[in-house]
Length: 170
Image (cartoon, one colour):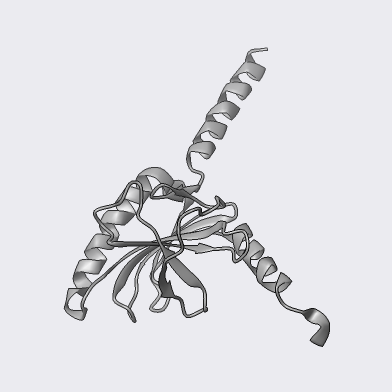
């Protein structure tokens, strides 16, 4: 009986540690939740997706702008963005700020972390199930970006876009 008790105790510890590492959202927004605020376009991404501005319930001093990507019909949150822009002379500051934000994220998500130091895809990544976090300094737009994404919600957004297209011409 003591082996079974020990096994149950260890299993409970593993589950509680795993539960505390789930990626749910940031800045008072949860991935997958409905976005009830007024839509104010903040930016259009290279992919054509619209990033909508929001004022976070708990803003970070490391970022100045916040936005969400939404499913086109149900307005559910696909991604949560936070970013700050730097001028070209401040690129070293971006790398320093990235290290600070990385240290903060590591306190919560360290076991979910992978780090890439490639010329094109540099940054820090965290992944849990269908959700991921990307932290990076961009070279083209000179920004520090923090992005929370939900892959299932990305699929939902594609299905909602496809539902609006008449397939008769295919």
